[in-house]
Amino acid sequence: MNFEIKRQLNTLELSDLAEVIEKNENNLNLLDMSYDERIELMLEELITTRRNRLITRLIKNAELKYPNAALESFDYKTRELKAETINAIASMGFLNQATNIIITGPTGAGKTYLASMLGVEACKQTYRTHYVRMSDMLMHVKNHRDNLREQVRFRKRLGNYKLLIIDEWLSYKVDEKELKFIYELIEHRCGINSTIFVSQYGVKEWHERLCGGALADSIMDRIIHNSYPIPTNEVNLRKLYDSKKVEMIFDNKNN
Image (cartoon, rainbow, N blue to C red; front, side, top):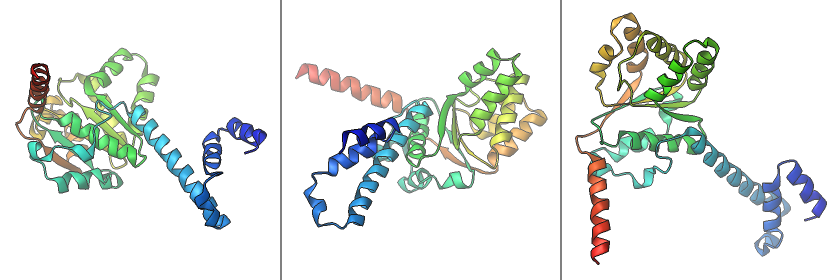
C-alpha cells in the first residue's frame, strides 16, 4: 500500500481498513476472485474486526462483576436450570419487549454470575449494558443529595441503557429520597428498556422492603407485570467451587 494513503487512513482513524488491505495484498486465494468478490471479502473482514472491537468495548464499559462469564461453559446441571430456558433468554428477545428478568435465590447461588453472563450476551449483540450494585447506586444518590442536576443526570444515564443489571436489589431498606429515585428510575425504564433484578429476597418481600405505601405499589406495578422470574436453587455454588479449587491446590502439592 502507498505510504501516504496509509498515513491518511490512520489519520482518519481507518487504520483497521489499512490493515485489512495490507493483509490481503499477497493473498493468492484472491487471484481467482472477481473485483467485487475481493472487495466483499475485505469488507466482511473489516466488519468482523470492528464488531469484535465494539463488543470488547461494550463489555468493558458495562462494568460487569464477571466480564468473562460465558454461556458456553454455564453449569446448568448444578444450578438445576433448563438449558432451553437460559438459551432462550440469552438470545435477548426479551429486550425487544422491554421485559424484566428477576433472578432470586440465597447467597452463593450464582445469581450474579448468571446476570453477568446475560450481560455479556447482550454486549455480544451490541446492546448497551450496565451493571450496578444497588448499594453503590444509592450511595451515589446520597453523595449528591443536594445536587438535583447530578441526580437527574445519573438517573437518565442509568435509565437509557438497553439492559440494566441491578445487583443486591433491596438488600438494604431504603429511605424516602432513595425510594423516590428508585421510582423515577423504574418509571424512566418501564416499557422502554429491560432491567435484570438480582435479589436474595423473593418478590413477595419486595413491597415491605420498599417501605410499603403508594410508591412501593407503583414500583412493583412497573416491574412485575412484565417480568420473567429465574429462581435459583439452594446449592451454594461459591462454597462448592471454592472447595474444589482448594482440593485441586492440595492435590497438586501432594503430587
